[in-house]
Image 1 (cartoon, rainbow, N blue to C red):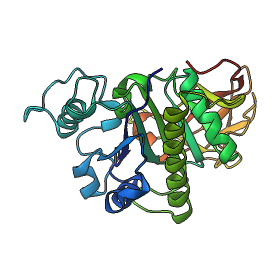
Image 2: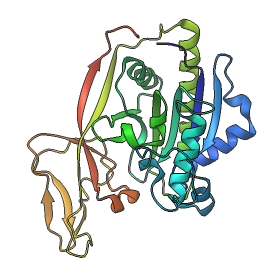
Image 3: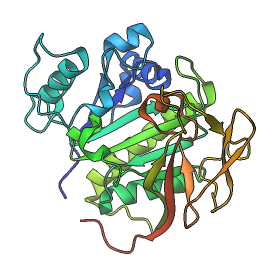
Image 4: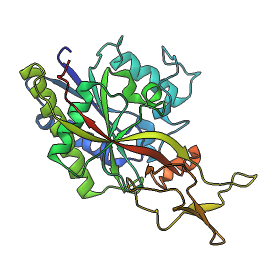
Length: 298
């Protein structure tokens, strides 16, 4: 694998996830914070109009749009599709300033803590995630490889990428500790990439715990689309904790418990994420895996 020459740090892919927005503002005001001798590091505000309006998006979710084959911005397109074309034409593989690696910052109302999102499980990305986990053992690593996010997210335009998800934090607000933790993760990623370039790929870790996406659960709804149940109190804020067959999962407004009916233990994440109500997702289900990284980097 060749050097990682150009890195793009994205904030505001969702306009009301302010930790990434204000992190990028700080980096633009203090570029020495992200300057590394063997990397070109750029920043991007993904959805400027949504940031100005303090809302997730204007017309549709920008982070679900990049599978569309949009080549050029056009007034006939909605705002997010215009952003897709502009971002792809600037930073995509055939763009004016193609990037090798994207760091995409997000915030969630779920109890994510510090979460890394991996859209691909190549040796380079796995070793990076394992390295970051050794620095901050509380980090959880979530693999979205089976969820389709590899194709439609903003970060999908780069050959290598990682998402940072921090929470719980209410949309449209800041959280000082998570803000600091988010920055520390970005510095560690840049340092790792810098070391990788200097050492020609000798950075290597031994093991990694991974939460692999296997499916999602929606809230039960009536014929009008109104939800009929809530996350059960025993499950609320229990991201990454085991959910066994028969365990309480949802609670109706009449107080009836709806149990998890799966065949095996799963580990829910993004439990009760506010932005996922419109997507029909009460939680994502994962399998917990322990991966041994005994192969050298490519």
